[in-house]
Image (cartoon, rainbow, N blue to C red; front, side):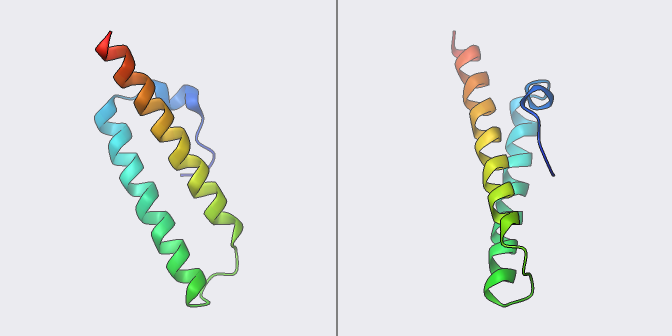
Length: 69
């Protein structure tokens, strides 16, 4: 998923966000493997995946705090 927007993520529930987080982490792992083996030259895609993971984790934490209150 490219260019995730926090406003779109806030509309989803925690289970969907956790599923997206797992997919992003797997995609990051695959991109790193491909870079190591020389199959991909676009090393900046790692940065995009890392940012998406951070956005997802932030929204999940915010939703968990809202539910706890």
